Image 1: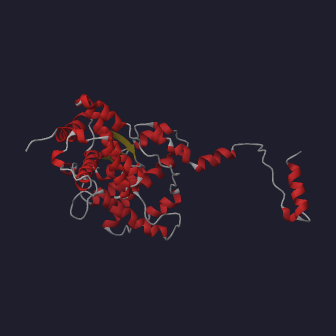
Image 2: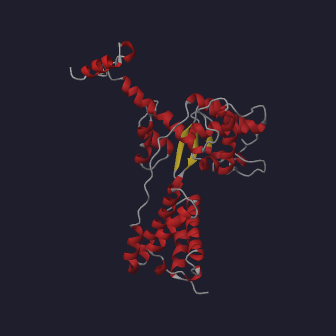
Image 3: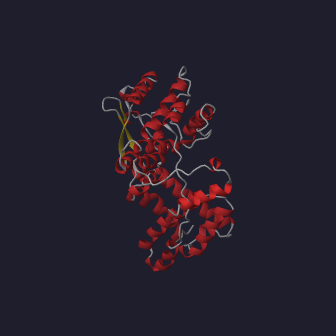
Length: 341
């Protein structure tokens, strides 16, 4: 079968350019693959194109515009998901510019397709009291409960992404002082995150009970399921929501369903509210850009409240109660006159 220029470049992009030159993680590359799998499905099912014959001339801004609309209307993707798909296509298009300059104008038109703006919702982190309630829900009289409790405390204490917790190996944990965890983040970037003594003790007890402290087991996953396979994102999310539902019955501020990313946000906010600067929060979270971390400065209601309390001699005066006046007209007259003095 004769290969097309589109299939040749897409194969090189996914199998060579992204992993070897851009050093992207397997999870990120898998997300890119999903985008192009959906694009080809759209071309076949909606545009009625033979996907084995698609060429770069078919890769047009009109096609991408229609594909973006299809993602939103037919697949009911959120704006964020739509933007992630477009980002993958933009990345491929930038790669194509250097490979096929004869189609440069066409590629520039694709790159000009804008991402959709979304309203940023303020982060609503859990309070420290709520986190404490959540972490106490696992039944620590059972082995599974002790494992789950260890997962939850590590998820919060490290502010790690859920995939980063899944990928941890026993050798990534240092229990001696200063205790820390080596985390492999986005873009295969490694960061070292300190853990508190209580978390270190919980980890040591867990590893001792599971007989995982021997050198020959250091390469094994830190957390596994009953079959000995490393836990997946879905598995950890299931564990978290199991105890979130229980905790919500005790503390109504705790949602019955929690995205693991909420614990990451919560820990980051707690760090920032403890008088740490955004640079420290950025390094702790493993952000590559301080702009990403800036959301915590905008969202910290507690720090805004403390800042307000620092303002002395406030010009705000107490408004007299209308109930103390003889009638409504007298109250309105007195109230209005205060603004004209």
